[in-house]
Amino acid sequence: MMQFTGTPSHFLHQIAPFSIPTMNKNQIHQARPWPGFPTSKGLASFGDANCMEQLLVHCANAIESNDATLAQQILWVLNNIAPPDGDSNQRLTSAFLQALIVRAAKSGSCKMLAAMANAHRNLSVETHTFSVIELANFVDLTPWHRFGFTTANAAILEAVEGYSVIHIVDLSSTYCMQIPTLIDAIANRFEGPPLVKLTVPGVPKDVPPLLDLTYEELGSKLVNFARSRNVMLEFRAVPSTHADGFASLIDQLRLQHLVYAEAGEALVINCHMMLHYIPEETSSPLPNTNSNPYTFQPTLNPSLRTMFLKALRALNPTIAILVDEDADLTSNNLVCRLRSAFNYLWIPYDTVDTFLPIGSKQRQWYEANICWKVENVIAHEGLQRVERVESKSRWVQRMRNAEFRGVSFGDETVSEVKTMLDEHAAGWGLKKEDDDLVLTWKGHNVVFATAWVPG
Image (tube, rainbow, N blue to C red):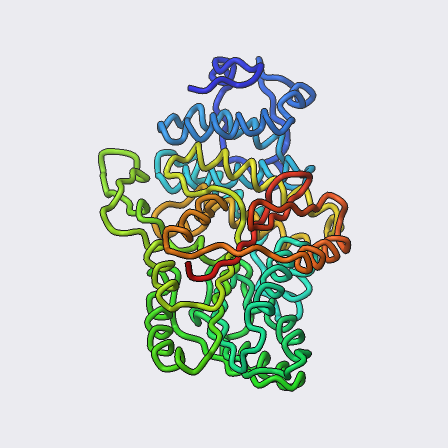
């Protein structure tokens, strides 16, 4: 088992297991040292991010090996050094702590951990369901989404120049929040505004952010907004889900493609942080009552992501945009996934202090969404684990394998992104990697944007 930095593993075995059923909301994060255990002051030595990560890894190993006693001992330490209202590293660790507790409780190996999970659920913040105005303001708080909106819109406008009909397929996690700005730009074209057709997968999302409108209501608002800009917009929501690789949407697009391909219609595929919800081919659980309930085996089925991208390529789109988070959360190994997530999701916790005050409702919503992501990555498996982010390099290879060819973003796009970043904290940056653009925070990759045409 992995050793702690500067902390012998046998030290943790000397800690007496704590009694969870007696804990309440006020007690759960209070230091409760007993003989031989360091005082609250002594626990401070555990408080740096590297040590917190090691503790989480040690705890994950204990949970996976069904060592309930060791898991409880480490969880007690984490409870005391990582309050949910602490600094950014403490709040990050608290989110992972809660996710590990939920995972342990789901395995049914320890009733004490189940009780602890219930206590933590009472402390957690519910994810917020946004109004349209709330969500529009929310995504504007940070470049996390604005970066993708800006790069995609610039590339789309350049690609569809001269077309009188533009069909946009918007696979976005933010309910078309990118589209009004694009409509504004289209309305000001020298040759006059085109007819815009907007198609979205119309199944309500069960992942944050959540919206308090149906897709029909959202479509009505977008049509009215476009009309106010003298742009004719046709909105269509096709019942389709990421769980089967948007199969129904692909079928509808194939039919439309046959009808409109010869009419000179521009087809734009806009993928904004949505494709990573499509399951991987190694995600099928293997039921086995004699072993860990999270045991997996690879399947011989083709990758849904590969099939989806090849289906898009067959539509011969004018341009395809792929924007997503630059991390790898696809491993079937819990510890590998935990390390990758911990070393990526510190970024949203670190950035929040630059744009949202402590105690604000928006900050609670923001961090609740991060907690949801952490729990999904750590506590769930199979089809329940939808947060399966892949790195830019892997998506680039997927696109090339599907016979797409990357195209560069122009200097004007780079200039627009830099202007947008000037509205935010100094830690945000931009770098170019081959044809692609990457949003960074303090030099670390956050979100990538790529543009593609049929090869």
